[in-house]
Image 1 (cartoon, helix red, strand yellow):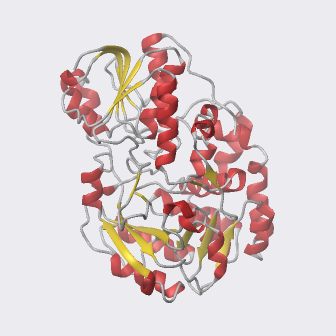
Image 2 (cartoon, one colour; image 1 turned 90 degrees about the horizontal axis):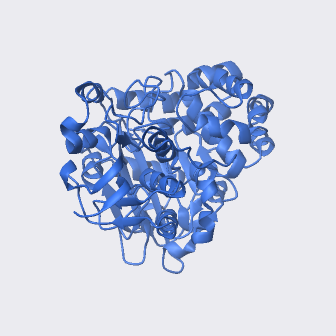
Image 3 (tube, rainbow, N blue to C red; image 1 turned 90 degrees about the vertical axis):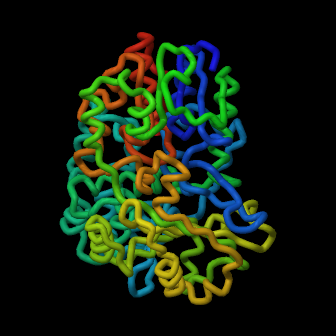
Length: 483
């Protein structure tokens, strides 16, 4: 491969593109290389079931995409991205069929929670009022916060386990279930330290800017980022699976939007032995089993309130969620796993033929599992939406092994880029004051295996770019926007 650039980025997921754009905005020349024939990583959309039905292959709902302090600077809406906001960010179904809603308003959410409403407002309101200050500090590596008092107040709640926070704040089942289901997105047991942080951050994002979907599918986010990349003079090469460092063009800095294992395989001895040894101790989390459906009609929820949100948790009480997470971490699959359900065409009819719909769901399973969870997932949906199975026109399933084959960054089917427990929340993939560096002066890691972990928000890429700009080029990164 010929050519000389300031920066080469390997991988065009949200973090690879985010890093490339940050470098371009700093005035550098950038070339991005992608193994697939289309860019996007976890933000791809395709016809998985039947012709005319568009399904998000991985990421689908984007609370941190719209809230991202880096994406907000890029004005992606000018490049065709359209965010669609359901009237409520989330519906959570309890075991008895009752639905608890995460509303845009803290007060409206509290009204639906009932007896714990005042406690919910007391927990959330102090943070909702200062999201501009909090989110740039939260969505990044461990560092001296810009607003230390605000951050310390948040940290006192966030470092607790989700179970500990719930037991100290609430007396009824609704609020703990709602926040516990949100915290379960971290895919770790809810008794672990710092699991409350996931529930708080995503709930606050819902109150602050919603849990939107992208019109046309998650690939629309990728399309807008690629337009921004090209408008700044960046180049994108598709269909090149990089296996050795010698394949790469000459550059002053190399950023890898890959898991750390792939970086080691490609770079070999260019990365110091001490870094390679530490990366070998990096731990990955559970996998997911995902289903997509083409449907003849909307999901016939027993409680029609569920139609107000694109995201539904079929997860029961906090105890049930905790039990489901524990089973997975013991290496087993249970009959009542945590299930996350999506129904995008209720709000974006462009994704299916007129009058038809798509839906998706996933549950957490042990890594590398090849167990078929289809019957378990569909039985749970049928429990709360009788007649669902009769509406299915087509279905598509993918297990953790298949996910890892599709995208090697999903090691063992882990879509979060590594286990996000307290030991690897900020210090990933190694314990380092700058987790994006590798010990090689020109090689950096910019994937979700770095802080602030998984999701389509580009912040891992932004901070990796900031590290490379500082260490290699002596430049400051482009500024972030407040929430």
